[in-house]
Image 1 (cartoon, rainbow, N blue to C red):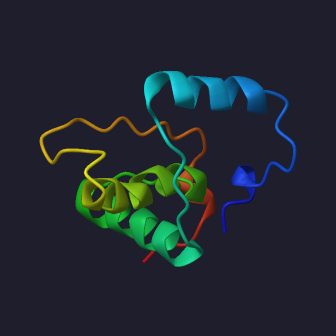
Image 2: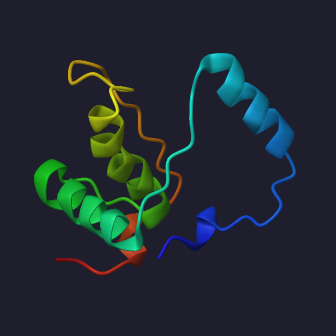
Length: 90
Protein backbone atom coordinates (compact mmCIF):
# COMPACT_ATOMS: atom_id res chain seq x y z
CA UNK A 1 0.00 0.00 0.00
CA UNK A 2 3.02 2.30 0.27
CA UNK A 3 4.99 1.87 -2.96
CA UNK A 4 7.21 4.84 -2.16
CA UNK A 5 8.81 2.77 0.59
CA UNK A 6 9.78 -0.03 -1.78
CA UNK A 7 13.34 0.91 -2.64
CA UNK A 8 15.24 -2.27 -3.54
CA UNK A 9 18.67 -0.67 -3.57
CA UNK A 10 18.72 2.84 -2.03
CA UNK A 11 21.65 4.90 -3.26
CA UNK A 12 22.35 6.18 0.26
CA UNK A 13 21.90 2.93 2.19
CA UNK A 14 25.34 3.17 3.81
CA UNK A 15 24.71 6.74 4.94
CA UNK A 16 21.30 5.76 6.31
CA UNK A 17 22.77 2.86 8.29
CA UNK A 18 25.60 5.05 9.59
CA UNK A 19 23.12 7.70 10.73
CA UNK A 20 20.98 5.08 12.49
CA UNK A 21 24.00 3.64 14.29
CA UNK A 22 25.45 7.04 15.22
CA UNK A 23 22.14 8.29 16.61
CA UNK A 24 21.17 5.09 18.39
CA UNK A 25 18.17 4.88 16.08
CA UNK A 26 16.56 1.84 14.54
CA UNK A 27 14.41 0.74 11.65
CA UNK A 28 10.85 -0.42 12.26
CA UNK A 29 8.62 -2.51 10.04
CA UNK A 30 4.87 -2.03 9.92
CA UNK A 31 2.18 -3.99 8.11
CA UNK A 32 -0.05 -2.71 5.34
CA UNK A 33 -3.01 -2.92 7.73
CA UNK A 34 -1.16 -0.82 10.32
CA UNK A 35 -0.37 1.79 7.66
CA UNK A 36 -3.98 1.97 6.50
CA UNK A 37 -5.22 2.21 10.10
CA UNK A 38 -2.73 5.00 10.87
CA UNK A 39 -3.75 6.86 7.72
CA UNK A 40 -7.41 6.62 8.71
CA UNK A 41 -6.71 7.60 12.34
CA UNK A 42 -4.76 10.70 11.31
CA UNK A 43 -7.53 11.75 8.95
CA UNK A 44 -10.33 11.23 11.50
CA UNK A 45 -8.58 12.36 14.70
CA UNK A 46 -6.28 15.11 13.45
CA UNK A 47 -7.89 16.19 10.18
CA UNK A 48 -4.65 15.45 8.35
CA UNK A 49 -4.70 13.65 5.03
CA UNK A 50 -1.40 11.81 4.64
CA UNK A 51 -0.06 9.44 2.02
CA UNK A 52 0.52 5.81 3.08
CA UNK A 53 4.27 6.40 3.21
CA UNK A 54 3.75 9.23 5.72
CA UNK A 55 1.28 7.14 7.70
CA UNK A 56 3.96 4.44 8.09
CA UNK A 57 5.77 6.75 10.51
CA UNK A 58 2.67 7.11 12.67
CA UNK A 59 2.02 3.37 12.46
CA UNK A 60 5.43 2.73 14.06
CA UNK A 61 4.72 4.88 17.14
CA UNK A 62 2.86 2.21 19.19
CA UNK A 63 5.67 -0.28 18.63
CA UNK A 64 8.31 2.27 19.65
CA UNK A 65 6.33 3.04 22.81
CA UNK A 66 6.06 -0.68 23.62
CA UNK A 67 9.82 -1.14 23.17
CA UNK A 68 10.60 1.84 25.36
CA UNK A 69 12.32 3.59 22.45
CA UNK A 70 9.84 6.46 22.67
CA UNK A 71 8.27 8.03 25.74
CA UNK A 72 4.64 9.17 25.79
CA UNK A 73 5.75 12.76 26.53
CA UNK A 74 8.09 12.97 23.52
CA UNK A 75 7.29 14.82 20.31
CA UNK A 76 7.09 12.86 17.07
CA UNK A 77 7.79 14.65 13.80
CA UNK A 78 6.10 13.00 10.85
CA UNK A 79 7.52 13.95 7.45
CA UNK A 80 4.67 13.52 5.01
CA UNK A 81 6.00 14.07 1.52
CA UNK A 82 2.88 13.09 -0.41
CA UNK A 83 -0.78 13.98 -0.42
CA UNK A 84 -3.37 11.68 1.07
CA UNK A 85 -5.95 13.20 -1.27
CA UNK A 86 -5.00 10.61 -3.88
CA UNK A 87 -6.24 7.82 -1.63
CA UNK A 88 -9.68 6.70 -0.44
CA UNK A 89 -11.54 8.17 2.49
CA UNK A 90 -13.24 6.49 5.43
